[in-house]
Length: 228
Image (cartoon, rainbow, N blue to C red; front, side, top):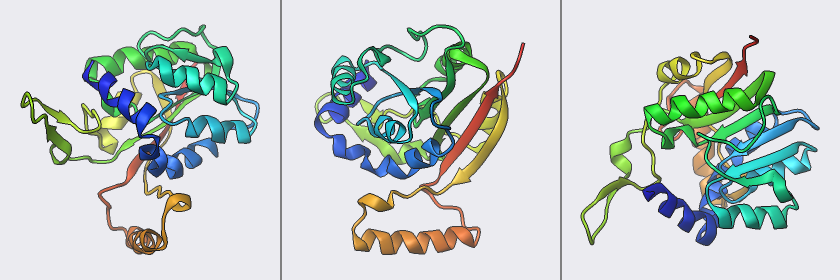
């Protein structure tokens, strides 16, 4: 319930907060072929859906926020392809999709929720279909803790429940999928940066090329549904 309140505010009142994700979403879209049927879980500001449509992808969307779903259904003319629901109980048929995208979603789920949700993803994927996504790499959850000034409740400001490194991500995915790609990526959103941010990010890219681990990297993964 708490995360529902967080995302109701960000998705419907502060959509600009999602612009920093354009870089990783562009990287994901490039992994999907035109005309493939793809489900995106977690609409955010609808950036992935826009990019997918530009590439000729047959995109569907799932999100628990009814206002966000209605808006993207109208704005991008997705209609019934945009559905209200949870990844743990998706309103889609078995083996319906060539790919499912979960970018910055899994870290919001508890261990038990991840297991249930990945089984649902496995169900709606066709054999050979791919789960494609990202999570923050090696996040220190304590650094994003906020405290409500009224009740004193402590919470992660983005609603993250878990932190992942490559080992944990691999063990999470291998229970149901064959891993095709699992690696650290630095995925800046150049198109929305001013000159100062671009200069600072260029310096970070040079450090990254030298093998220095950055604090704002992502883990990019592609996992394939096994046959049988």
